[in-house]
Length: 209
Image (tube, rainbow, N blue to C red; front, side, top):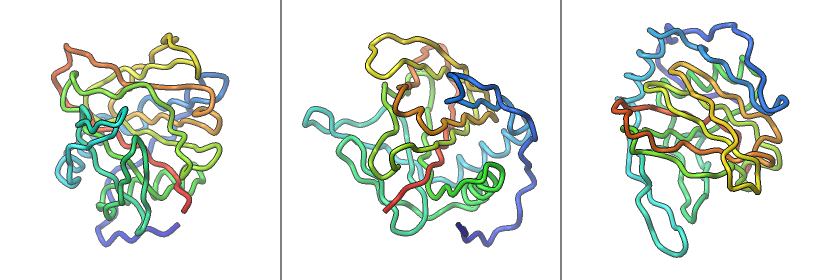
């Protein structure tokens, strides 16, 4: 995949650290893919570049404002449907384009879209779900970059109603959800009332027309 990006090359680099292997290999966690200074720079760039909006979803036939801000970016013509809403991709921002290219080169993938979420404080959250929409194919591999406040990533087996574990995601970290993860596990980002700082989360993925 070739992403058009007229801006100069970024100053940041991905650290060559080995991942922590979790869930029998379905989850690879890189705690510090970016050093703290680079993570702060990325956070500020994305906060300014991305056209954050209040998203809406349909649940049980009613429209609701989601408890976070979001923005969807990718190759021209790419759309993504979940919770009764279809998102048409915005153009890549310079920083998102560079990050996507770097991740593709590092991991040998063909990522072509990213869902950006801005959690303004600990009251913003994400409910239990799996990223298993048909546009992602049968066994998607999804990369999640975290910047800003540390937040808990909760996990439970598919079909269970009981949380089985939590992984605290650091700023500058990468969570690689490997093929098979979305079939066997659900995840969420629960509320944390004591957190006042924002967090940006970028979930890069490959969509198929």
